[in-house]
Length: 123
Image (cartoon, rainbow, N blue to C red; front, side):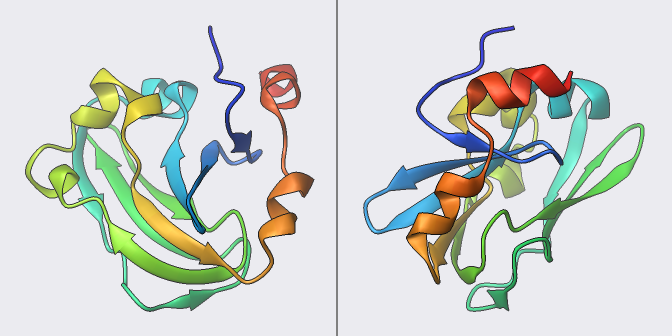
């Protein structure tokens, strides 16, 4: 499995990638593989202020529903609306499709997350 080096990861299978002055958050390829075919991605509240570890979104598959957690504290700025119409985009290319955008309270907090090698070591 090839894990991109241009982002950070959580033990709960979220990825975080810097994008300007905010961060994009998605789920890893391993997570989408475990979930199976996604049928819903959403429940993101724009403007919500979350602590690291708070539930930020929900994904549902034919197998189960799963919470997506905020990897860092901050404010939710956007939801990837393309996923409303086609949640399977994540199944097709999990590394290419973010779920929500967050403005970090402390951008340096991202450095405390796992790098690609650290994430890979979990599996």
